[in-house]
Image (cartoon, rainbow, N blue to C red):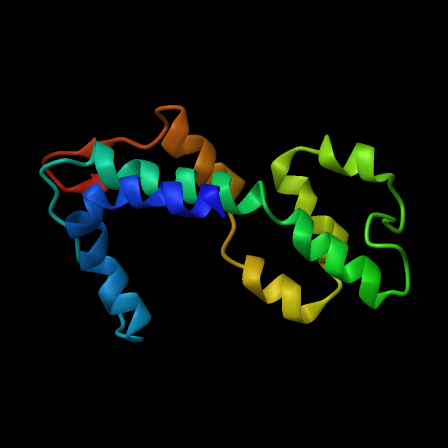
Length: 133
């Protein structure tokens, strides 16, 4: 729970982030030639990566629920011990419940490459075109 509440600090860049978020959540098609203006790209740049970190650090609860649904003890995974599961790379933690459509749908938008780009300087704003590379 604390991880999710810590994300509030990342909303300092919400004014930049919200330009696209509003359109996408309303189902509005965004033309390919559209761009988002930004005067402080560093704030929204980190939002996805920080959100991915918080969410992927907490998906073990979905794995535990899947274990129970499958008739196992909550900490008894199908192919791994609980100890080994908790040591997995965060991107691989989702595999433990990928076969459960109700859980997998919550994770469709995860992208470890975007997380890595946001956290390791791989996402740069081109000032002239206001696009990222």
